[in-house]
Length: 280
Image 1 (cartoon, one colour):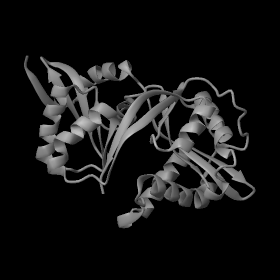
Image 2 (spheres, rainbow, N blue to C red):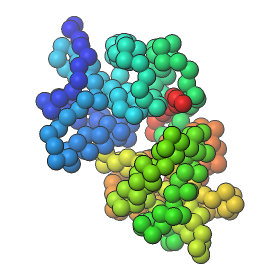
Image 3 (spheres, rainbow, N blue to C red):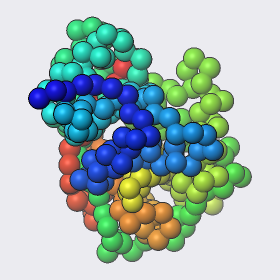
Image 4 (cartoon, rainbow, N blue to C red):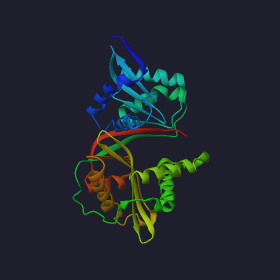
């Protein structure tokens, strides 16, 4: 069979949608990428999407932007994609996606890409399609721009704690603040205050194919262990299901037992396993 790797174009996108429909939760990163382009005023362009074609049929996709994301890749597709990645060198900050695909792809590029800062090989992917049976926290709400002075430091603290480096390094402070501001303006950010103190926050990081993926769940350290997160996350789920998408998902490190217990208490169930390879 003849196979090839080539950039996707507008004529290939319907084929990409077929891949996404096979598993919208797993492929929501790619779905969000396509929907972002659809909303653009400019002619559709997909320079960051590589397709693996077999006899002219699209079988797999590799996203090659800030994050490398394998989509529906077979062993032979990963072999072909890794040849491209080894030739181009590392330009991304992470590889993320289905664990088997990510870890195999990483094994094929690690020699030329240099050491990873961290490999997180077991990240349960959880989802919900209905409201939690837990009573929600009615103080959880969409954030607004007046919350930014409290929200940005909380986001920086959460990112640094989770990823291991600050998002503000190398002069990235303004860009990161702008990113948080965009999430707030597009109603993808949630907060809870106790009096004037921000004690909980979460964001929708990705929306695509009817799936909203939650990220950045954070409770102020001195309030952890006090039962805030379960009812707060139940409220986030209710808001997202009502206003944003029919499926709520997230993924979490397997060693974060506190977070896993919280999400399962809310009603999330595991549907997949991701892995992430992080670079400095």
